[in-house]
Image (cartoon, rainbow, N blue to C red; front, top):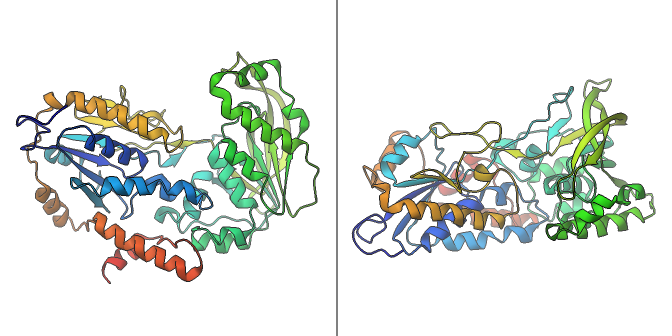
Length: 458
């Protein structure tokens, strides 16, 4: 599509797009818009002063290489027609109706910020936590900086076998001196240094052939110093249906996962200080309290798989086991939260859409579009698909009533909102790197908005 004429997307009247959220899906959408051939002005709104969403607050600190993807996003942010509106919460500081007045199209890219619920008796007991909160806490997320995780007991149970569950398991098992070399939040390093956790159970409802972690995540567990990894050989003795499932084209990662799990099953315990015990075919049905009122036991029901290769479902058999458990983490997925003025499916935690189109002028990308699945790179194709719908609609959108940056700024000023620009973020970024250098870490992130804004006042 070219930018001839004076319609939306022309040099005379650039297409004005507001993106809510500054994580991977938002940046990939911005990049696709800039490459569209139209004249586009992209305005990215983020409730924190800092951009990058889940890359900053979700990627484990010991996976620093994954975070280098922000170099690509920084390149997008350097485009002349990119504007960053940090420290602005849509739905509070600006309404959707106000955005519609000043922008021709809106892209929702605000992800899935809470966790899926696990509705079992005892789930609200002390020492029962969500993996999402734990990960956000050790990554210095401002909403979670004051959380406390009681790690003064020996047995932790992690429910779920996706990559987030692997991150939680690995962080609990790793020597703290290794974590101290990463950009993990200092408050988390201090608490983890006092951890008494010795045994970490990582439990999945299906079998090893279906586990959702990636090959890198599972193989890393076997490389943790001072930690034995235990897998029951019976669990990796696959059924004929499992074997057929691993031959499916989409099962390449699962085949590599199996190689690690089989290798673990052959290891002999060394009597290491910590143990990771990986179990399959079990689901929690109840938590029991200990004498101190916190979690003391978890009841696990044995599951059986049924169905054809690639579509097997886990069903409870009624057979149960009670396992000692002092600290309980549930890692069964993220869940989206709605925003006023936008359609929302509360059961699925997504904005209803067709290929990313919510309605002409409104589009969704990333986890709020499709649910919490895939890796960071998955969002690129996903965002491009949604942007294609926007571009197809562009000729018939009709321009917004008041295409003015100054009007948006004036509105926020009148409400006492301090907007953080991308250049401001670069100052915060530099200060975090400097703080890290002083501590022998790659960086030391600020964990409160007040600290971030204070940097800009220096």
